[in-house]
Length: 161
Image (cartoon, rainbow, N blue to C red; front, side, top):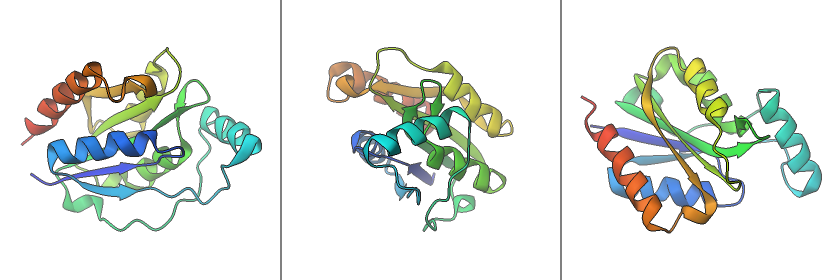
């Protein structure tokens, strides 16, 4: 089975999780590049606003064709309290017609998970989304909790035929 992990990471936390998943699943990685300036306090503010409003962003040219994979796993950080980073959402909306099955993962700094963000991605996925998702706090990333959650998520992905 061929798996692609497409993710956006501003601080490197989501990148670390994507790499752990890739290692576990033998997946290829597509790094999503947001062409908007997202650095500094204004980048943080406007990024959160764009996330909450579900505004698309311009992303860099992707290297992998999503139609060549059995499963595409899309990930990004939680922004604006209830949405995934715009680059991840943009990738999904631009490529959903090429994707067979899709799953999602999200990283967050805060204690409260956002089911709204994951439900939004499922809505965009046109019925191609798996029910299981992976949601990790930054502080959990190197813990036993994360290893268990990654293991459970990976088993769901590996069962897809």
